[in-house]
Image (cartoon, rainbow, N blue to C red; front, side, top):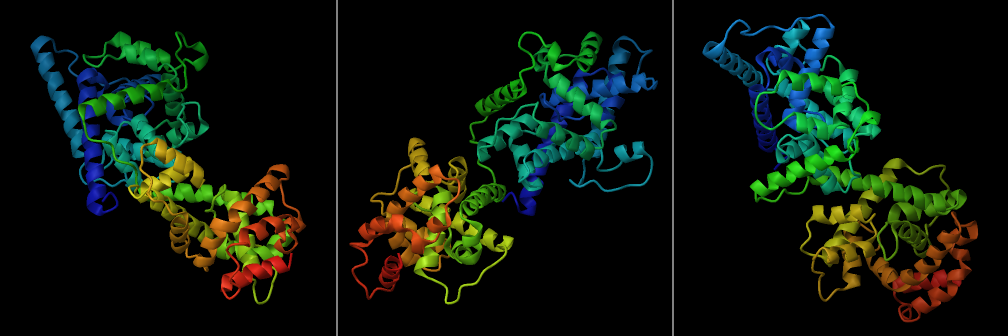
Length: 505
């Protein structure tokens, strides 16, 4: 639903409604003479709550204008009493109307327009609220490289357009690392967000945002939730822009403090709304998981001698070197590749100089399909997304997933048939010989895997004699034991192939 046009528009509309509400609150708390600065660069993104971000960014822009010698526009300065209050209300209404009007029929992608910079910022679809939502989405897609714009809009809807709350929700869904303001990726993402939002002073915006985030407790005490912000508060806020994290007091400066504030805001939101925040979209999670599986394949191929891989085992790797099995993924990949190449040898051996990236990517995709199928056979109540999330958390290691899922209260399929689970995995992964693989996985593979796993612990790379199954004499006893009960029928094709495997050892 979130990827359909109506779903995207819904997410965008709800997020924008929250942003409009933040600007209304900020306009009620700021003095009218700061409204022009708000409309220019008072963005709602940063490492504080959205309203505080608007106020802080407005004060920062006003400070910048004064340094440049541009006098702020005085609105209703000569008026007093009731007349002044009436003037202030009219100015606020005009500012809100301008923000709302500029948000109609906007696109998430800025379109180049002719004219001055002021006209560009005030033009249709380029108001402060629109530039804010673009900045928010850009931060999320820059910080989380697998996130799409559609995903970002969805998380902005779920988080009420609160940047750090959105970051926390994504971290929960994708088991990402804990966000800190001192992370260089966060700094780069903030700069990308400011650039996307057409901020006039991107480097200063980034440095001032980081400075305020380092003093988040002081800023929270300075900016109460209600009431007009006093000029003394504005002056104190301006001073915080120039402070560094080394000048913090009373525990301020904890790089995780802004996220702790965000988690607190999210908990308050969940207390007011009983609906459970749903998990994220499958697409970006799948990309993230495929990248992790790719790293596993790189490690597995680095453990096989280059000559053996390029002269013989490249075929087994690409056709059946999947990463599911009873051991860790790297051990499974090596075992599956060598087993298939030995049991189903090529009619004519050939050597390659390199392995095609697209071909190995296809094998990785097949592995992912097999892993998901295996997990869902074990735990039928799990969705595809939930299965992928367990795979991501547990580095695609099936035994760990079983333990973790049980700890989380998921009921395992009973009675459980390992053969059925491996059969589902091999079929989902388009294995060239699923029946033979199931027999191998439940009989020989557990014994061979223990020996190979021990070898890999001792040596970073297998020797040529180890990698060549025809010379793996260390496995002969284990293979004989594993095949004693399962290879007696020599008329069975797989049985004949395994008998050949023993004969060449």
